[in-house]
Length: 188
Length: 170
Image 1 (tube, rainbow over the protein chains, first blue to last red):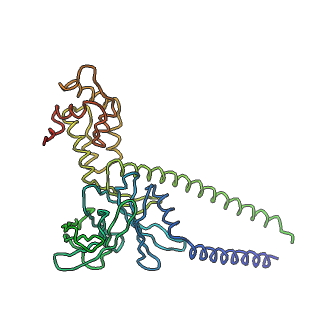
Image 2: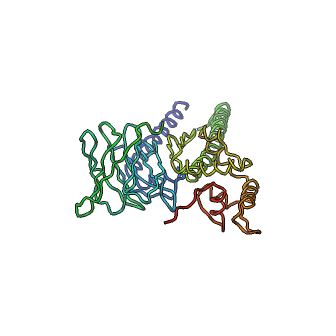
Image 3: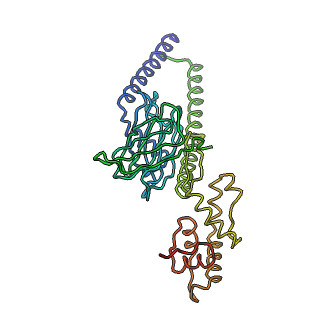
């Protein structure tokens, strides 16, 4: 009889484990990242937030560019999410206070996990940015638009302390050139 | 299927132990979550109030949040220090600022009686406001925190006392 009971218990546990695993897999595969982001913001308590862009680093990692703090939204953040067996989960977030008024473009340097991220607010009339470093490297950062406008660059090579930002309007005309400096030691 | 008494007792003991551990786990978890929520709200508020940069490395128990001052923070501290140098009864929490203990820094600006006493003294020391003019503690608080002049004469009083620079005229 004991053997029979043992078989029943083991079978029930095995079935429950398989069903739970399949359910987690199904929920994980069907999870909406935007809902996961909202949930992470809720638990971070950094509401009200505004998402500018979501960049997928690979199938299981994503960076969310956002600003928060109603009504000014001067806190510009980047949050890393990782897809685990529990779905999209918070890894790290960095929020920088940057005042937007009276500036064409501003920028800060940050490292998040293994990545160097440059990002900042920019004036609404800018359509495209070209970055030229002192050693001649050229980049075209992405631009996200929400409450404000945010440019961002996920650097895969050496970071730079200074660069010229050439700002273009929607007709491709140069609006202005600005030199921005980045503190590579931040936040030390 | 008839189970022996010994087996039934064993089952009850196992179930009781399991239930006790589960309850203990959930109550502890609930308390931790509540503490984490309160701490995250404090960090959010302090980040907003002092315009701090914030790095969140863990937002679950144990939470790991690092806060760093910005130009906005420095401007608040400069206004606070300027008032405190002239009116030492308003504490300027130098040690907490140096330690970047922003929650303690915030507590130093919460004594409304001291704020009221200082703003009253400022109005008395200045030759600008007419007799009877005054301000509430929020006037001084809003000036330090938000650089706002929310009451009549406060800007002129601050300039008169040398705390704010004289306005340039065109």
